[in-house]
Image (cartoon, rainbow, N blue to C red; front, side, top):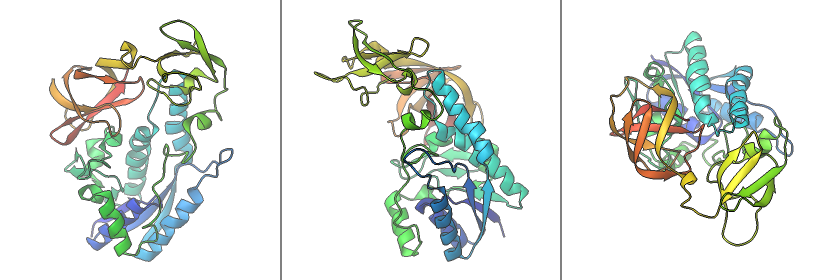
Length: 341
């Protein structure tokens, strides 16, 4: 019997994942990954509640349950990476790094060492022989966050939810009476839950007041508490009053200045050519040609031509930001991608 370790976060998706695999005849063990336990001002980290919920479901299903402690590695590989990227003026995606470094490296290695044959998670994606394919539920598809996983890791991974929509998952969890069937999905970045990124970063980076400058006129139109907290295309949180809304069109971290414009067509907001760094291909390196790309999670797929490490888009796209990821697809297969330079 194939032994599968299921990453159980205490949510409905991973709970149903464990239930389905047990029904399919796998020898299932639930594993809670203890990645982040730190409380933040005004917000209690929900890890203990999530752990309790995961345990309850494991008891319901009659499966073994373990806790893997990755907190130290997580802080180093994911949190420190994110903070350093923000300090450099970029906008990273910690969920992508979490999948690359923790779930499909640390967890996979620890599970295999502990006697598992495979791992499984509640991601909305499909995998066939190490090939990553988009989920049936295009709204929930999470391949964007998985593009830095290796084909070797995917050979040993199961994604049972890839064939279902979120409403179906909720209904199936309800039918099985799973404890987490009605639990709300967690919001925010993977380790800070409901707290905003600015509040989180403020625990590690000093707030430094500076000027918000109208790019067209060169006039100071407001003040901010740190250029690193702002990202290209941002409209909310500028606290600049009157008239049409301003959008962030640039920033200078060294000068601690944020540049804004009321012109949605400002050239700084739009890009047709993207230079990629830290390119990762899940399996084979694709030859140059035309592919579908996604410039952020849930962004529509758009056509682009790949030449070496450069993508030329068919149509310019808005707010493509340094540090974020562009993910490349062909016929529903996620090939890989890279980080915007």
